[in-house]
Every structure is written in structure tokens, then in C-alpha cells.
Length: 298
Image 1 (spheres, rainbow, N blue to C red):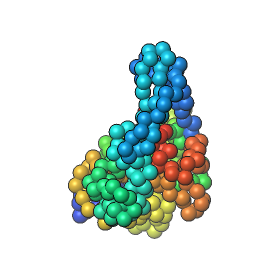
Image 2 (tube, helix red, strand yellow; image 1 turned 30 degrees about the vertical axis):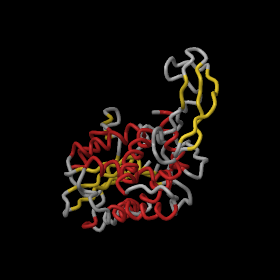
Image 3 (cartoon, helix red, strand yellow; image 1 turned 90 degrees about the vertical axis):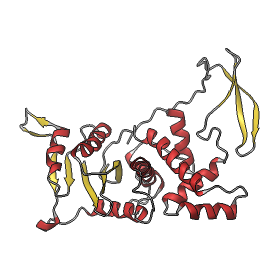
Image 4 (cartoon, rainbow, N blue to C red; image 1 turned 90 degrees about the horizontal axis):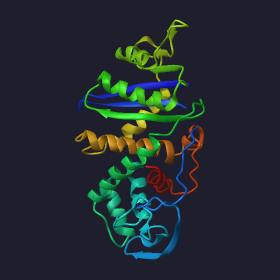
């Protein structure tokens, strides 16, 4: 398995993108049975439906053991807008539409409009929610697909931040990575070698560090640069993106989800997750299915 690492440094705002890009299947445990929220019993029966103002009819359940009534949280509990509208906003936002333009779209096609602040809050909320599920997926390496395993947004290009992302990569891929390609940043060599360790028996490091520098006419990391150009295309015109590290990281997580699970990769004509994981998303609205999966499992 080949691992490519690149840091983009933005001198205007003094912040870095730390993004791990990999040429990378996973089995996820789904909670299929419905359990009572109070006693944990599976002795459950359906008990009528509750009508809501914005989300239609919600199925109610009754526990035959403790005789309590409850509904299933589908990820939109107590939201004043329906799931279709919210996931539409997520999709438009990560396709490059600003929150105010999304608001104008809602004003034209939906009777109850939402403010641009609400749309932004939805992006932050559901990016965090889905990432709890996607961050725990195990990746089986293949060389057929470009899968963004991990990303981070920081104020400075510090070794501890790079180490944090690399440890996350190692956690997801185990011992599958054999070659790590980076740019010419000198700190990479020490961090990469210390992350994957040294084999005393074979007297060599467990990973080959391939440093590519354009000044030495070694070419570019074209696949990595292509991905970073996609990130810059979205964030360059996003006002306020660099103001808050916490919200910027949430948006980066959302874009990571969009890149791996929503957008089709032109080279393989499918989403990267279809090759890199065992997850099957059958709903055309993949945002909605990912929210449901994250709610069921976390």
C-alpha cells in the first residue's frame, strides 16, 4: 500500500492543511435490533405513530417489559426541519454553494425558509456526527482507489499535529502501509519512521519513506496535489473559514466525508468507499443514510 502525505501551507493566514491521502474494505457492526431506552429490553412492539409539524409521522414503540413508550432517534430528533431539507443543504454546501446561496434556493422551493446561520450549524453538527462513524472504519488497502483516510487543520506546521494524524492512519490501516510518500519537509522522515517503528530482526524500518522534491526534478505528487486543489477550490472562497480552528476542522471532516462517500471519483467512476470499505449505501441520498448509520452506532 502506498501512502502519500502533503502539508499545504497558507502564508496569508498562517494555517496549515495536514491531509493524509492514500491509495487504499471494512466491516462495520450494525445495531439491527431495537432496544428499550429505559430497561434495554428487546421485547418491543410498534405502538401507533406520532404526527409532527415538520417531520411527518414518527413511529412510536412500546416496551412490553417496563411498559414505557419511546421513538427511535434517526439523527434528526427535535429538528424543526425535515431530513430531506437538511441533507439537501449539506450536499449543496460541499458542492461549493455558499450558505446564503443555499438559503436563496430554499426560499424559492421550500415554504419555510431557513437562515444561513442555521444551514452553517447543520453543516458543523452533521459533519461531526457522521465523522464519529467514518473515523472508526477499518480500511483495507488497495491501489485502485484514492481514499482520504484522515485530515486535520492547524495553526502551525508542528510535529505533534503530524504525528497525531499519522497515528490515526496507522490505527485504521494497521500494518498494510509499506511506502509513505511526502514532500520535502525535513521533519517528516523522523515522524514517519517513529510512527511505524523499526524492525530489529530485519534491521530496517517497517515503512519506506519516499521523499519527493520538485527542486530536485523528482516530479510532483500529482494525485495528492489534485486532491488538495479540490480542497482549495472549496475553501479559498469560503469567508471566515480560517477564523475558527474548531469549525474549520469540522468542515474539513465534512469535506472528507463528501470526498470519500458522496462524490464519484472520475478515474474509477464510483465513490472511493465502494472499493476501500465493505459499506453498502443503497439510498440515493447518501447523506441521510450516513446520518442514520452514525446514529445507530454512536
